Image 1 (cartoon, one colour):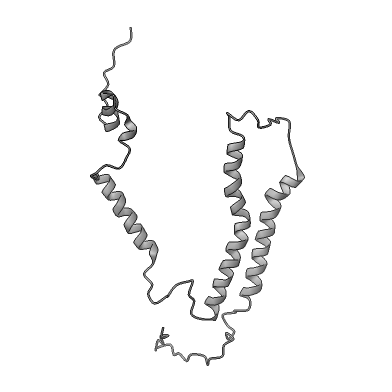
Image 2: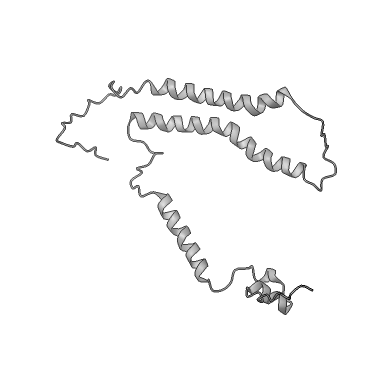
Length: 172
């Protein structure tokens, strides 16, 4: 005979509700008062939002560039996001689609255990991302070489004169 094991009664509100015969789903709704853990989560989210919002003022941001190089970098950013979206967006759409189509309870989905290889599928999986990486490399290299750090930046304004001991600050 096995020795009896004494277990502690569950002390969570859901266990207490089950013992009283209440529906635990009622407890998962927002409570009128927050626990210490809930207050910490709210403060953490507020702090995270504050940190991620940036501390810029007067439109100083990557999206509002001051200068020729920054304006070109902003344009490259949108090109790069567009090219990467060609790979990322179908992935976000197709993964849940495949999970839903080939779920265990779906009896209409075809099961093909002997299927082995498909050139069109291999090209789509490997070829398109490789082409996008090549396009990104070409785009960045062809555009970045115009802005050599040792060459003068094409501009209609005279270059700023600086000395090693004096800092010249741009007026925003």
